[in-house]
Image (cartoon, rainbow, N blue to C red; front, side, top):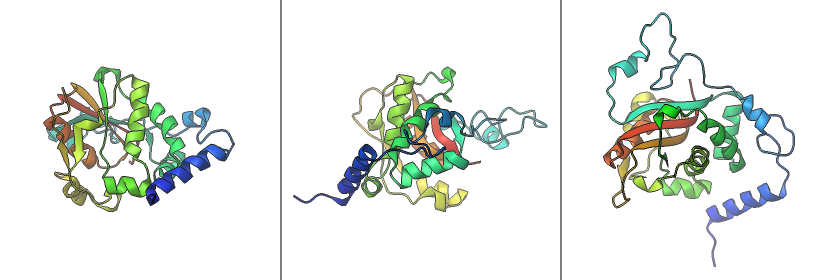
Amino acid sequence: MLVRPAVWSALRRELAEFLLPQRCVACGAFGAALHPDCVERLELADGSRCPRCWGLHPAEPSPMPMCPRCTRRPVLGLEARRAAFRFDGVARRAILEAKFRGVTALFPPLAQASARAVPAAWEVDSVVPVPLHAARRRERGFDQGALIAAHVAETLGVPVRRELIELVRRTRPQASLGRADRTLNVAGAFGPRRGHGAPPARALLVDDVVTTGETLEAAAGALRAAGVERVFALALAVED
């Protein structure tokens, strides 16, 4: 029986994580991919930020609580988003190691810490990963959004609802595009799935990194089309 390359890749990664002693991506000591104490020392995405898009927004001299762009933009899909860390330093290295080198043991500590950034006032009742195209999932051997969603949901004590939306066409990597092209790249890329049961009232979209937020906005629109009343978003890190 032939085994697909992606399956071999996943098996090799899991075997290596089981057999080889893990070294922390932050401190280099053995024992974990990322020690709890090292997670606490990652650079937080705090400071004065827009409560809607979570972009940097100085409180002074502007009297507006939201950034100018969010003040002008109506709520069509996504109501607000948060990110736990800045996409810089060790946090950036950890996410890239997890996503592109398959060190998936980094996702649980990052996701569990990120869940603490979700405001209690959002009262989310489900977690939804941003869908990944099947071809890209085969290439990597895993779905980083689904892994992150599972640990965020477990921390928040709510279910994962992967069945609500789907990626209806493959998109180009957003990191290689400018803002205008990113909007066009994901326009109409997500759609609601039918026959998924009653939609949740307040869903939390999760992704690894947010830059312009166009992917989250497009996925949020699909969730609203699926019947979700309010959509919020969480990323592990934000690129300022």
